[in-house]
Every structure is written in structure tokens, then in C-alpha cells.
Image 1 (cartoon, rainbow, N blue to C red):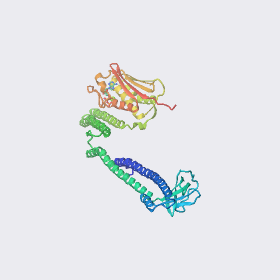
Image 2 (image 1 turned 120 degrees about the vertical axis):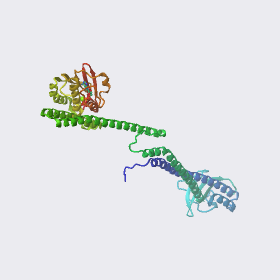
Image 3 (image 1 turned 180 degrees about the vertical axis):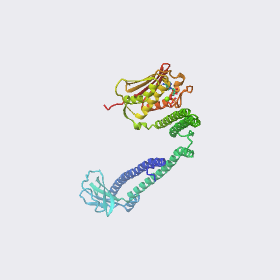
Image 4 (image 1 turned 30 degrees about the horizontal axis):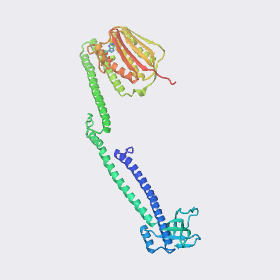
Length: 462
Ligand SMILES: Nc1ncnc2c1ncn2[C@@H]1O[C@H](COP(=O)(O)OP(=O)(O)OP(=O)(O)O)[C@@H](O)[C@H]1O
Ligand SMILES: [Mg+2]
């Protein structure tokens, strides 16, 4: 089982919408319950107050007689709760009503005409009590009286339960219907994505053509990025195919040459002609070996992984080593090879192997095409702003101006020239320099060719 499998987009959307909705609805239901409780309490207290007034007036009217059964029944029926009452006169003598009313809270602050409401227990039942102190002017009970009216809370509880369950059912229906709407909404919203996924699945592995579909704005940028990636892949594949075709073509000629020269050597009648043909075979094999080496380098640098080999190196030392390797060849060609450094050391961050190869290719070109019949090649190294500048200049005939725009292209060479290589040297050198965050430029005219290389100097920590 894949542990890293992330939640589907549909589940995420549902979770993000439903969970907060559930929380909101739960909080809403609880809040509604407490609000209903408060409001129903207020209503019941007001009723209790009214009842206390009715009882008081009735008791006065009836000169202290108990309430009529009819009135008591009317009150009890409308409230579904039993009503009890007691009226005491100023001397605390029971005037009318039931004995032992629920006791007033100890800290009750009794003020005339200001009713006090409190909860209590009466005959093992929860009751709500109202106590009031009022002035009565009647023949039977002139003066201040204390009235208690209390009622059971069953009706109130029932009403509250009814209100709360109604609220809960309404909320539940709302939640379910919202959940359904969200579910269908998410399904509908994700449809273009699911269709796109199905369209991609139907494709074969080698089909990287553009996906043409009408999609919503949010998906169109994703589709745009995918199509851009496909187009880059198409370009990369085409370049790879071209490279392989070119490489095969370049390898075919020297190998065919080796084969024919080897066959000719076999047929040689004299030892000297055989030796000369074997020498040609060796020469062709050397060229093939160089080409194979260049193809390998090309592949290596195209993977952009050489940066992992970078370390701090001295370009002066590195250039001296490359030039030393060419000293004999330059001497044989009657070419003066000079190195001019403004300082003893120029540090950069790079790959020794690949930078040597880049400089090697440029000196090889200068010797091969710039000074085939003698001349001079000057190499100079100096600091230029934050870069190290390396210039390789020969005093040859230069390159035809019409070739210059493509001179750094892979496999590009002067096809009219008799002695040319496979056209990879400059392209490899330029890619290597660019991988060192540098630039390689060329200036060529009738006075000679100059290759200018700029590589960022190594910065020591401040
Ligand atoms: N210093 C130079 N003077 C004159 N022509 C040059 C010089 N350097 C390069 N060229 C021209 O540019 C072409 C491309 O050079 P590049 O080094 O890329 O390929 P190549 O030398 O032909 O083959 P490779 O280097 O792969 O063996 C050469 O064929 C040559 O015509
Ligand atoms: Mg070359």
C-alpha cells in the first residue's frame, strides 16, 4: 500500500467544506438551544408574574377565600403545569393559599413591587417561584402582603425540548441538503479535470503532441504548462534524434575509411606501401577515437551533472598544462605559442577536466585552422571586473563572415574547407563555459580569430 498516497481532490474539497459546515451547524444548534431556554424562561416568568397579579386580585375580591377551581384550572390548562400560591399579610399570618412555599434564597433583596424569581424544589418536583411584596387596600387585608406563586416546570421543559428538537431537525435537514449540493457541486466542478485525466490516460507513451481541449480558466494554466512541457520534450527529442543521426553519420565516414585503408594495406605489394597505409589506418582510428570522445563529452555535459564535480581551481596552472601538451605540435608547425598572465593565480570554481577540454578544443582549432603554416597564437589571462578573462588569439585568415552566426552550432563546420573535423569542438567549449556561468564569444576577421572566455572569479568568504 502506498503510504504517501495523498487525499483525492474530491475528498479534500468535501472535507474542507463539510467539516466547517458541521462545526458551524453544531455551534448554531447549541446556541439556538440556549437562546430558546433563555427566551422561554422570560416568557414563563412574565406569565408567572401575571398569574401572581391575577391571584392577588382574586384573593382580595373574594376576601381571602381560596381561588375558584375554575380559575385555577384555566391557569393550569394553559400552562400544562400545576400552580401553587400563598399570600401572607403584614403580620406574616397566612391569608390564603398553600402552606410551606419554597424558601426565598438567603441573599434575596426584598423590595416593594419588585418581584423575585428563583428555582426551587417543591414536593420533590422542580418549581419556578415568584415572590412579590405588594400593597393592598381592602377591608379584609389592608397593608403590605407577601405573595408566593410557584409552578412545576414540566410544561416549560416540554416546550424547550420541542423547540430544541425542531431546531435540530431543521439544522440537520439544512446540513444534509447543503452536503448534497456540495457533493454534486464538487462532482460538477471536477468534471473537466477528470475528463482531462481520462484524455491523458488514453494517450500512448510516445504521444507528446499538444492537448487541445476547452477547459475552465483555472485548469487552462495547468494545461498550458503541460503543453509547454510537451513542446520542450518534443524539441528535446528532435534534438536527440538529430544528434544521434549526425553522430552516426560522422562516425560512418572514418570507420568506412579505416575499413578501406585496412583492406588496401592487406593488398599492398611492398612493405613501404603497406606501412604508409597502416599509418593512414592509425590516423583515421585516432580521428574516430577523438570523435567518440567528443560524443561522450557532449552527452556528459548535456546532462548538466558536471556541476557536482566543481571545485576551486587555478586557471593559470590549468592553461599552462594545456599549452604544454600543445608545445611539441606548435613547434612542429612553426607556431609561437605564448601565455601572458597579469597575475600568478586566477581562482575560479569549476571542473578541471572539462575546462581543460574546452581550452584544448580552442587551441586545437587555432593550430589547425588559424596557423596551419606557422604563425603565432597568444593566450592571455587577466581579471575583468568580477570575472577571469581568457583570450586565445591567432593571426590566421579568420572565418568566413557568413559562417560566424552558426559557428557554435553542433556539427557545424566549413564544408568547403579541406581539413575540418566533425564540428563539435566549439559547441562543446561553449556549453562547458556556460555551465561555469560564463560566456564564450568569437571575433574573427582577416587579421585572425580571437576567442574570448569570461568565467566568474572565485569569491573567498568575506
Ligand atoms: N581559429 C580558427 N580559425 C579559423 N577557423 C576556425 C577557427 N576555429 C574554428 N574555425 C572554423 O570553425 C569550424 C568549427 O569548429 P569546431 O571546433 O566546432 O569543429 P571542428 O574543428 O571542425 O571539429 P572538431 O573540433 O569537432 O574536431 C571549423 O571547422 C573551422 O572551419
Ligand atoms: Mg575543432
